[in-house]
Image 1 (tube, one colour):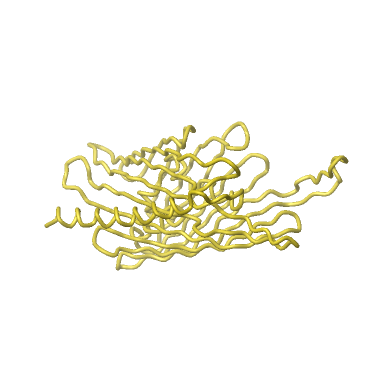
Image 2 (cartoon, rainbow, N blue to C red):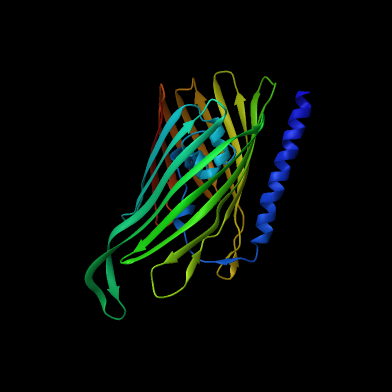
Length: 318
């Protein structure tokens, strides 16, 4: 009976995956620009340390940013926040509050922003003008996820987006979909297998308050992943693998898929170390847990400058 349920759940997941894939083919010839580029910056210190492979895990305050279906795993109320120490005076903040219910469902409100102040204005052919300006991007979202059958969960979310450059401002919306299979395994080594799929930034557009009717299209992102929870002699291990694909083209080039790999080891549920591969970039991180409070750190390469980016995050339960 249990095997029958697992097979039925996996077939349901394949059907949902087929729906997501159909979106991918439908968007294959879509031509987009750099609209909403800040949405591609990895969110959360724990996911970043895992090589940005978090769609099949999605079990903490970063869940709504990767896979809203993972919200079904949240119990009680959780608050998450992150500060990203970046080069070139960039400031990146992220926060989430998740309220879970006893019915394996949860609601989340999220905030994500990146900005740069005091940018020196340069005039064509004249050099610096003596003036400065700012550039700021922000996303405020709401999402929900829950179980529809014992092993299968789904989720969805919506985001309000704003971008500003000097006195110009753009606004828009984007939507997220997600699915997650959680299958406990009766094995001495493997405790649980998870598979996740999400389609992020669907239908996203940015409309600017200029005289032009131009709208920036935001490329949707398809993420497919799997993870396994392992019980070893003295510590727990989570291994995860994922692929991501921006749907459509940027300019004349079509985006290739990206591979993400991560492994995380926990000692007595008090201390964790993790390492990952985000495409060609090596990442690593660590966590310390005190009761319902968790502090996360991640070290990842800086995608705009030489050196590294340091992510500091907290995850707090009530």
